[in-house]
Image 1 (cartoon, rainbow, N blue to C red):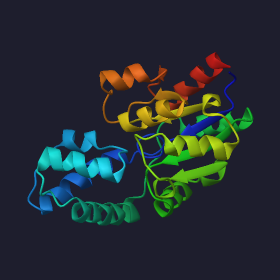
Image 2 (cartoon, one colour):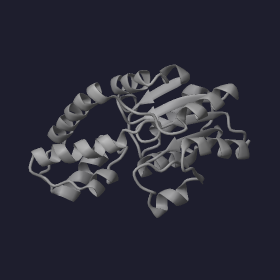
Image 3 (tube, rainbow, N blue to C red):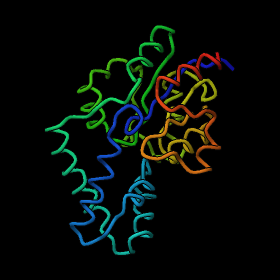
Length: 218
């Protein structure tokens, strides 16, 4: 089936923000007396809150104060971004321009909430590129459940099978796969586990390389 749409994750895929989530999750946990490692913070990327909470309680102890730590993590990260801003990932502008020139429908499917998504994408000048933007607070169940990709495809007026999904995290790849999209893995903080790499239909080292996949599929 011809590919007509491309759906983008945001954090770690378009924006170099996952390193910040990792840092501030660990700092927040430390404030409550818990040692969260770099690897612990990697595991929870893009997970919906229910699964994220359960995972951290399993990793750090059943009494880990998830909601309090998350609130502090948000505060720390917000303060940092207000001063330093966020950075776009390599190849993003090139890919967005290519998609627009070739009449693809494009959407965002991010676990971040609407206000943060608008803030980040507007600050780097790419908000207006997207036909639809679906955020974590707009769906019943977040990643790795398929809801957000099913909604994104529907809002674009496409079948999931007509959409490429670009993701940097295991939960996102699984979400896109479950929805019936074509998941493309663009590694960010790590190279992904075996399941993630096998589930992805293509692995691109940068967003620029995604253009090669689209040309091949077309």
